[in-house]
Amino acid sequence: MADIASIASNNLLISGIRAVAAVIFLVALFYMVKIYQKTKNTTDIWLLVSFAVFTAFLISLSNSLEWYFNMNETLDAIGEQLNVIFSLVWIYIAFRFISLRKAEEKA
Image (cartoon, rainbow, N blue to C red; front, side, top):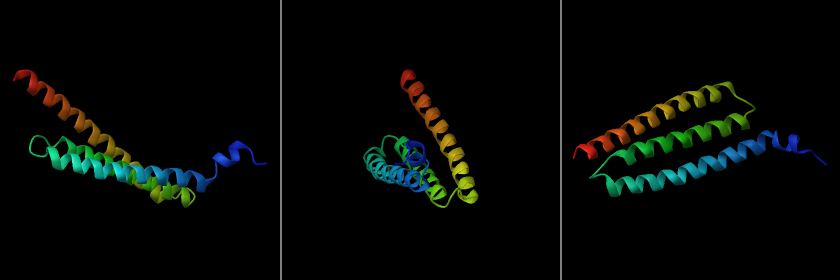
C-alpha cells in the first residue's frame, strides 16, 4: 500500500488539482463578466476583478502544466510573472475601493 506522501507528491495528481482550480477560475471569470455587464454604467471595478480572475486562471493553468511537465522552468517563469501581475492588479483594485469610499464620504 502506498503511503500518503508518495500519493500527495504524484505530479499527475497535483497537476489535476491545479487544472480543476483553473476550470473553477474560468467559470468565475464568466460570472465576473456578467456582473460587469450589469454594472458597467456605474463602475468599472468588476472589469478589474474580471481581469484579476482571468490572471488567476492563467496562473492555475501555468502551474498545472508546470507540474504535468515535471517542473518545466519556462512555465515556472511564466507563472511567477503572472503572480506579479495578479498582485499588482489586486493592489490597484484595493486602491480603487479606497478611492470609491473616500468619494462616497465626501458626497
